[in-house]
Image 1 (cartoon, one colour):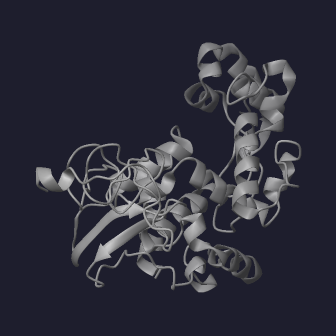
Image 2 (cartoon, helix red, strand yellow):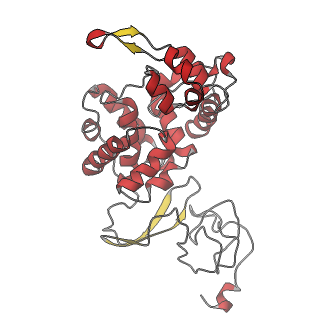
Image 3 (tube, rainbow, N blue to C red):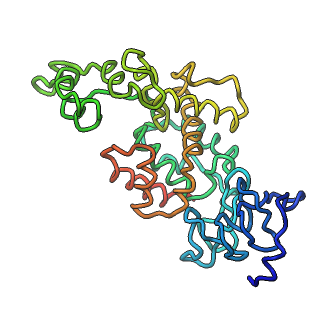
Length: 326
């Protein structure tokens, strides 16, 4: 853009009261439609600097070029949805008209009941743009993580802390520092795969999670109370509180309080809704938009469960989802 054009930048204000575009996110002189509101995105772009009308320098937006043709995401709506401009042959443009089906989900969750899969599909299809599950790419990333967290039955189980001493030492910092306690808290195998000594799961949770993620210390019992639950295992008092607040804003239900009643996360629809809230709170749609490579899947996995040993499995689930989702 020329200097004379940039000089026409207008002061902060609504871009257009008659359409969906919010005010500009860029605080610099990017031209006629730059409204300089640093808190909201617009058609101009997210990145400070005089980069012109198609300012695509936000590193978390998809690339300018796609395999099937020109595509650009110069903006996001107020709910965070990336808005794509370009040729309509692009496969991952916003798919708000495409509904996810129980048949597609069955490809991932082979042992889940048809009733549960139908309920999950219906819930996602209510407001896919709000949930930011409105493209094939986002859905594949989301459900790949859910598949590893819940298994083939899509079981919103409470976290299982059945670990051996070696597992405790390798996975949790507390037991790395207190290896003698790992030897007493972890399970011991007997003959033919039986347990000679079961893992002391409540002690494990309180020690491993005490003083973390908003939990009180080991004696508070918060580690056990706020262990992982839901389709994406929400863990820690502060995360339960954050998901409660997000649930109220996204689903309009202020009566639900997961911090007060954590077992709600094991009950549908809250098992799914909590995962959607986690997805939004951690801005995982932006990571999902980066692409479909193994590195892209790993980037999402590191947010969901950085210390997991299931990176390869989540990549496999993503490939299955991406192949079968519309």
